[in-house]
Image 1 (cartoon, rainbow, N blue to C red):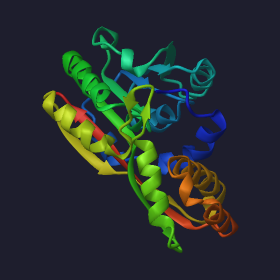
Image 2 (image 1 turned 60 degrees about the vertical axis):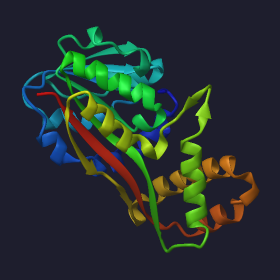
Image 3 (image 1 turned 180 degrees about the vertical axis):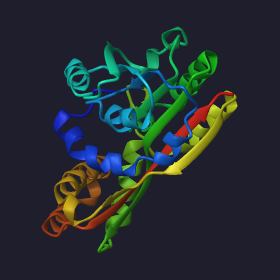
Length: 255
């Protein structure tokens, strides 16, 4: 579920992630927030975004499957009131006991890699522990490119189908994740608030847009090799478009 992304890609996307996340939801967090468990933390970019928005001392428990990413995350939380520990493991193994003493569970760009059952289990774990959850940048499945090309819709459809694929017997949620997560946390007794958190990529983000296009089209082509998207990708890379890429942030609070 985690450890699937390189530090290079995560570093490239970090500024766009920071600009997209909902500061509004961060402002609604119930306080005080002292201990935060970051699931699938990657390089720690969510921590670097959220820590300055919280007051007082903080202890971050960074959890990921990839030890190299954990080391990077632990070494790059440059805030004097913040301490960090790392835990190597999988989000699907989280228990209510793991959340003892935790004030907030977070994750970024993770829910779409889970199944409906795994998200329901995560909601139940948070409910049992009575721990608020802030989940950012779940893929929404919507892409707008300017200028548009006729093939855009077919690529988007194929990509979204790829995001919902079955992997080792697990059907991933892909762009269904925001709605499924909202339903799961509401059923678990939480008050749930969501906000759109799209990437808005202009000329200054050309490097990120190009790398995102390569990944977007590669996934679409894997899903639909019969559609032959090579010429489309070449045209897009020759003239990098402006892009709006949909995500959703979710805050769940247990009263």
